[in-house]
Length: 433
Image (tube, rainbow, N blue to C red; front, side, top):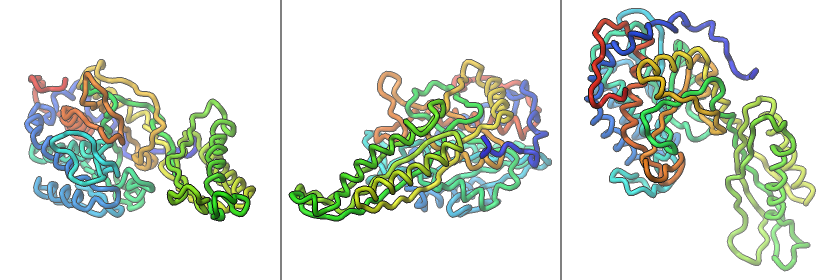
């Protein structure tokens, strides 16, 4: 794991045990008042779901978030961070760590097929990965926190990130901007549509998501009549050979003990005519891995195989390989703290360690530089039916997960930034505990 920066000596790690676990349930941020913000959370979520915007094009979403933060009373707000993200800061009256919480905001080029009353109003664009929920959760947390008047020891950073879905991703540029250089720890969450909502929290120590790289290949041949293939160079056939042979990159070139997958997502050739040999064919796909050496080897093998196969058939191949997101590494200390405070707040039976995933997540760029952890909230809306996965046109979440997300964020804030001085929290009918 030589590509993972585990050196956190420059961060303020003295705050790892800032709040005793036994005081989490007496934190003034967790006295139940936040439950009164459920209507805001739902209204915000439905507004964002109806008005999705694609990666790097979240213009109205950014305006909405920035205006909400101003209306709440935040004055330290940065916009266009790293080209499109928004950061709001709140500095407490006493010194302490700087803790960041991140939510992504972009949608996907998918035509929604749900019957929701708040379904997307934008043709061909949908929030099918839960980023509308993430943004609603963090906005609701920010609104409740500043209106609660609770003092903190340290600084809270609310990070609303653009362009998680499309490489190179927004996180890379946010980190490069230097806007988070003073952050001591960072946390993020993701709703899981394929798992039924149950009020539980899934966590993962160490590697959680994979290196995620993308490639685009164009094969240039020589067009001709379908009845005279000897006078042409069939780009479609050459590309079909390439598709087949690229599978050997993972099935024969890597150690079977290493996780890795190569998938072709698209194959386009020809103009529709049955009697024409196309002079151009295009494919694109992704490579996922965990091992840094395998990642580099797979890239090299893909490029050399593609170019050699094309040349052998008299064609020319162009390969555009995009080095994407690194593997997401949840730091052990921060993950352990997350597990302990969530167990204290919600009960151990509400936590589950989840397997690593071959999915990609650009939160990985943050934890390459800052100690932190990323966790998951089951959110599927159909307890007796099919819960659709991320990026599906029928993706839908149970809105109960919104306040669970708020509560988990407030729990972490309480641990790192709040000194409890109130009595024990009394549960009510709406508590998730």
